Length: 187
Ligand SMILES: Cc1cc2nc3c(=O)[nH]c(=O)nc-3n(C[C@H](O)[C@H](O)[C@H](O)COP(=O)(O)O)c2cc1C
Image 1: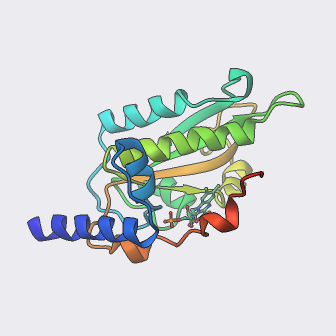
Image 2: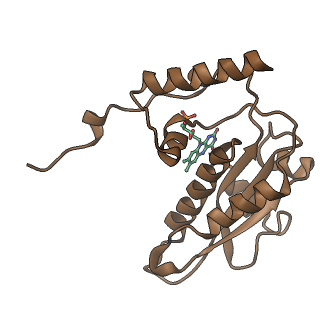
């Protein structure tokens, strides 16, 4: 157990070094050291963790504070597997659906922000998380089955679970573009 923990610490340190991302701030450290996990244990996400994650989604910013989202929590294995094939018991899926509303509003973008807030919250709690866009079409073709509230359409799914720490965090994450490729400072 101690060896696994030590390996995790080394892996997180290595990933930070690899991408030049080191921070002493607890929030930025979570963002910079996290990745989108695929490998989980069957240890369940507990209700307190789920509640805190959902609260962070509810607290997300949105255009005009419209809060154009609904969160559908799925825990049963059959339904989870219908959404994400390799989901396992202990995972929790949160379908983030946008409220279809008038022109000029931005439900998809706002749902993305809510999903990201919950993604960061999960990592802050020591859990793993991954955002999925591809299951949305399947969910939207069977909205009643997944109990998507009326007037809404699924935008993304957040998968949360306890991280399988036997997976090497450095090779599980994918590299990012260099700052020079992305950021330009107007002279
Ligand atoms: C909007 C969005 C949609 C995504 N859809 C999928 C998906 O359908 N399937 C999947 O395996 N990962 C999906 N991902 C996860 C990304 O592939 C992952 O976050 C990215 O590759 C970076 O991974 P890393 O942080 O582990 O390196 C999605 C991420 C986002 C933000």
